[in-house]
Image (tube, rainbow, N blue to C red; front, side, top):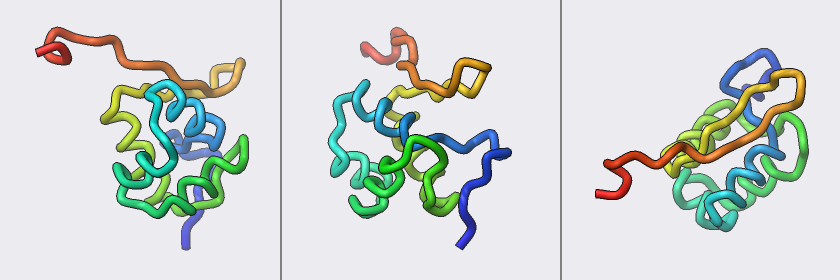
Length: 94
């Protein structure tokens, strides 16, 4: 089982996952369903503030589900990693 490494630019933190869910008002169960993972995997990923101890494939599934819902992951830039919502476009309102 390959775990996430801090040098990987696609890695997100447990704190970012929790914050992203809060922004889009998803439960852990909803994120698990949308990412096709178990709820226990989502909760394990969120249980730490730093790098989750789950596989890279599971992190990718969580990230893809959240990004599809409009979340943007902000990389570490000296202030710490974060999240924000994608700006709505005309297509979003159609």
